[in-house]
Image (cartoon, rainbow, N blue to C red):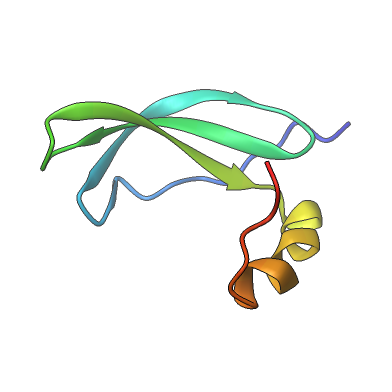
Length: 66
């Protein structure tokens, strides 16, 4: 298994990235703070090798099933 993960910018829109929470074969999860709602959120970034599996259904307007 490849344990490398994508680096994240310090901010994404209104979210300020705090730290990496964990990573696995499918994605990396980051802790961030929502400066508008003053709350913490998790941001999941799919691994490059899995993102293409979800891209087609998402672009067609129907999100992937949970």
